[in-house]
Image (cartoon, rainbow, N blue to C red):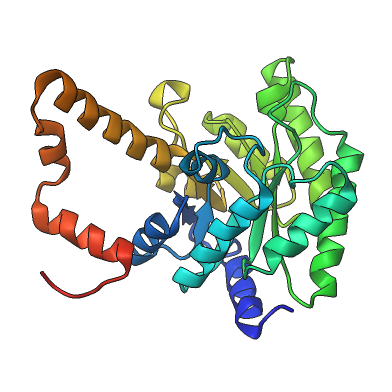
Length: 291
């Protein structure tokens, strides 16, 4: 059963991709990070599968058990007021029936959107595009049977897995993107791309809103700014596991300094000014009281 609130959030989330202003999604991995992002003024919450898996001590690529993933998703949905879209990797199933069963259980948590990708473990061989289109169509039919519009963000890993030239990767991404749109996807997610010319071509040649991953570690740090992506016509920008990795990197830096130098300068710097750090903590646990 899909609630009226879930349906309303789904309509709102779909509209965000049609607005003139680009939709910016910082990807969360637990209740605390989700509430902090929401409190920061973001319109929606998007999860990172890698971040959630790492919080359980797992590697990425569907090693985490579906019920563990669902438990985290349900906690996030219940903790925030904004729409929540989730990364379901390749669908948590070995066949279409298992994928539909997984998606049905994930919808039941109250989410409004999913990311689903056309590779397994970022394999050198992509899933056959017709097979992937069948998955998208079946998920769309499932959504319609429940009386609401599940937002499907279809990710193609052509640039990840193809051994061809850049023009060949671009051509395959465009072909797959348009086929996925025809099959029922709402948005096409292509990564890793950072060249403005390639992004512009994807926007022009794919008949769907485009999601780009912002990753300052690729492209020699020349990933376009949010404003530049908006000017290129990108509908949605997300940050994947970047926020989670930055958090873990900070923990490691603090731990290394304490162990090797016996000092806490990095920790102190991250907590300065203290009122700001305390405010972030209150946001993460849902408290609005003043110090």
